[in-house]
Image 1 (tube, chains in turn red, cyan):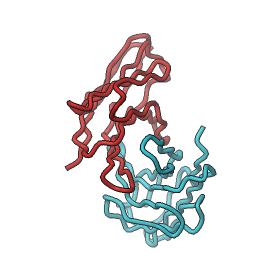
Image 2 (cartoon, rainbow over the protein chains, first blue to last red; image 1 turned 30 degrees about the vertical axis):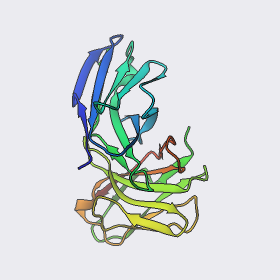
Image 3 (cartoon, rainbow over the protein chains, first blue to last red; image 1 turned 180 degrees about the horizontal axis):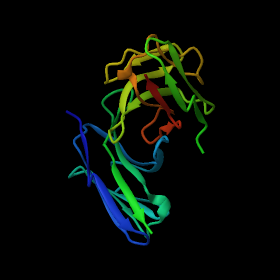
Image 4 (cartoon, rainbow over the protein chains, first blue to last red; image 1 turned 180 degrees about the vertical axis):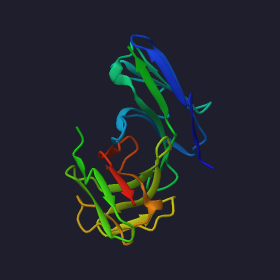
Length: 114
Length: 113
């Protein structure tokens, strides 16, 4: 069964600190992995997308890594800001169907305190 | 900023009513999706479309129906709303291709009383 597991489920950090969120997946055959940020009550917004051949991708203070061999990804947030408080969702796409089905993790709820 | 719009943002409706959730995108994307998301849970695919006149059911069983008469429009209809339909509904669109993004609307928060 294709699955995406994220950890931790929730995380609280102080403003200015760094943090790393984890994503493990079993989706096969793998096409790409995306990290989304979802503010409460809003739709997800894409942060990064990586294919099999890419092992790191940055978007400002967000840096995602991918190890396609171990099927693990991480999202590192540097110098956190209050506006980083949101749910961060790992999404893996398969190449086994014409749809390119998206498999969603449950997200990590990040809270940044002043 | 993604050009995909959902209306209404919030809806409170009585049991048994018929409702239609609207989703429109102006990016010319061929693929469109409807997801259902409960608080703190992952998104579940309930319907998708490859293009005009193409619709398929997703992974999560749903009593809703969809139509795709125009590329830019993908409405979702509930013929008879029930309290179990209370949830957040997210619409998304993308183009075909390995590295294309899926753009999401802001969502419709539906409450059936």
